[in-house]
Length: 233
Image (cartoon, rainbow, N blue to C red; front, side, top):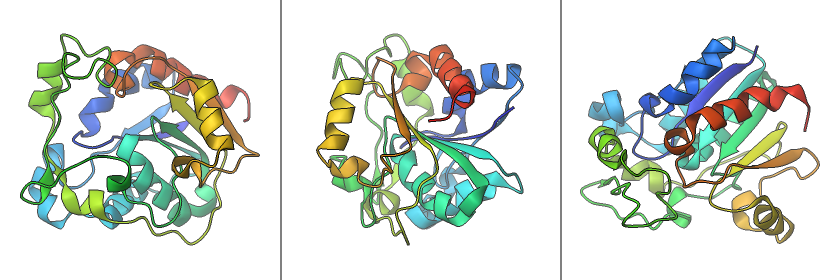
C-alpha cells in the first residue's frame, strides 16, 4: 500500500485526479488529491494564494503520514518540490508528471507563456483543434474540462521557488509529450527544467499522449503509478 498525494497543475482542482484516484484506491492504496488555494472549490481564496501557500497546502495534505509518494502534474511540481524540503524524510518518492524538479529561483512563468489578466491566468481551451499535441486525447472532453477549470492566481505563477538545498528522494519522471530518449537527452544536457534532479536516483517513463494524461489516459497513468513501488529506481 502506498500513501499517494496527487497535486494538480494550473487551473485544476482535486477533481482532475478522480479517474486516476479511483483505481488506485481500488488497488488498496491511500490516495489524497489536493485542491490548491484559489482553485476549484477554493476559488474564493485566489486573492491570498501564492506559491508558498500552495507548498503549505501540499504539506497539510500529508497530515501525519510517512512514506509518502508525492505526484505532481505540470505546475504542481513547484509546490511539491518545496514541500519535499518541509516534509524532510517523510517522502519516499516523488513523481513528476509532465513536470520536473526545477532548481532554486525558478518560477512557473519561466517555462509557461502565461499572461496575467486581472491578477490571474485564464484557462486554455483544452481543444485539440487549437493545439493537437498539447491537447492530444482530449477530443470530446474539452468542454467538460473547461467548465470545471478555474483561473490560476498569477502570484503563484510569477513567484520564484526558494529552496535550501538540492536533496531529492527517489524520483520518477512521467513524460507524455516527449519521448524517454529526448527527456534523458535534456537531462544529460543540463536543461534547467531538470536541474534539481539527483541523476543517481531517477527513472523516466513514457506515457505518450498530450499534457493532461489524467484526462486522456487515466487508467494507464493509475497503473503506472501503482506499479512504481515494485522496483526501486
